[in-house]
Structures are given as structure tokens and as C-alpha cells.
Amino acid sequence: MNRSVQITLVVLVLAVVLVFGLVVGRQVFQVGNVEPEPAPDLAEMNTYVYDQPRPLAEFTLTNENGETVTRESLRGRWTFAFVGYTNCPDVCPAAMANLRRTDKLLSNELPQPDYLLVTADPEHDTPGKLKDYTAFFGENFHGLTGDLETLRKLTTSLSAVFVHRQVDGELLVDHSGHFALLNPDGELAALIQPPHHPEEMAEAFERIYEWTKANREKTRS
Image (cartoon, rainbow, N blue to C red; front, side, top):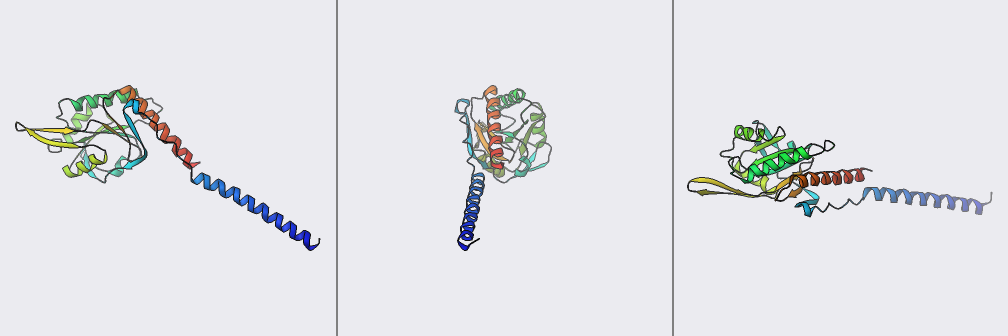
């Protein structure tokens, strides 16, 4: 084989290797940069879904069983969170009833979420009182109480607020009325504004879950 033929073969082999490397590199680059699907538009269900879930504030609080709960405790399951208090005369009972109705409407094929009442009145809402209150709605209903400032920080990261005021010597608490949906990473995934319709809430949850699942599978493929 003369030298010119050898040089030609070497050049051809190098060209093949270069093309193969470019193809593989392009595939790796594309897999690593998969564009997630945009969040579903659920405005007709009074629901706003974050394209990028928002982390919650760090907190250490106490649940209805007297156990310590932190942000990490919320990992591993979906959670509907609501800011309210057990002495609330109207908004909270209606909200909790809507959550209970939503829970009964969810398909058994979906992950079954928890429902969390974050108290805006820790002075009166002891763990025992929260336990009596949440147990009425179901075994997957829970409560959080503790330091007032810690509760305020958590509430803010749920895009909610509460304000205390005295009326004729009685404590009244004004608070947000929306539900915050937390994903299994313990992050704020969506806000569900009133008026709340359990049928729409169940459908919104299913669509958010399916969207989240699809995006996670896409990024792993």
C-alpha cells in the first residue's frame, strides 16, 4: 500500500470518528438540556401552577400529635396546605369540608395527598385542639402549631398572610383563603384560589400530578 493510500485511509477513519463523536455529543447535549413542558393553564379552575416550584421557608413546628415537624417532613407526598384556625366561624369549616370532598373525589390511581391546617392562632390551637379538629375531617388531615413568627414565615412562603385583631375583647384572625399545593419535594407547586369547587380541585390535582410526572420522566430519559 503506497503512502498516499495510507494517508487517505487515515483521513477517512478520522473523519468517521469525528462524525460519530459529533452525533454522540449532540445526543448527550440534547438529553441534558430537555426543555420541560410549560405548566398547565388551569385558570378556569382558579388554579395557578408554577413552572418552577418554590421552596418553603425552613421551619420547626409541632403537629397535632405533639411531634416535631420540619420542611423535610413534607417530602415524599403531595400536600394541600391551608392557613386558618380552629375557632374560625365560617371560612375554615367550609374550606376543610371542601378538602374532604376533594379527597373523596380523587381517583385511586393517583397518589393520595395529605391535608394540612397551618394555624394562624397558636395561642389557642394546641396540638390537642388541632387533633380534635382535624380528626373530624379524616385521618389524612393534620395540623401545625408553634411559634408565632415561625408560623408567619411559613405562611408567607405559602403566599398567604394572617392578621390578628381584637374586637370587643375577642381575638379575630383575618387570613388568606386559598389552598397551597405542595409537591413531594416539599415545594410550593400551585395555588388554588376561592371559590373552591371540589370537582375542579380534584381535576386540577390530577392534571398537575400528570404534568409533574411527565416532566420528571422526560428529564430522566
